[in-house]
Image (cartoon, rainbow, N blue to C red; front, side, top):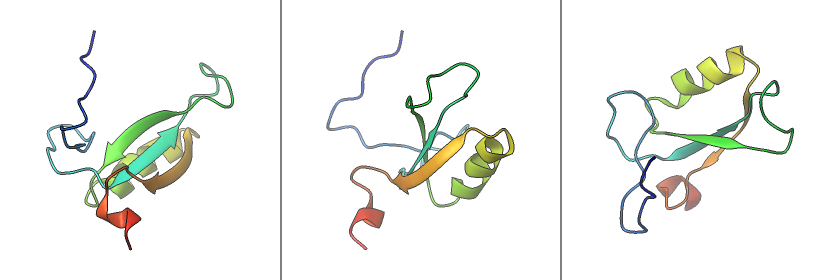
Length: 76
């Protein structure tokens, strides 16, 4: 079981081994497993946004890419 993040912990990229701050939220679902309105989220830094998005999109899972909460991309 994973421990919930505290509000003080920065969001980090979901790419394996990456500890960079997350700037993007890739919202996805697997239609074979999830209800149509359910969304799971992978977080991405700018460097991994495309590769994580391409992986999800190739499988037909990617639904949207939005700025991550607290990301500088929300301000610009």
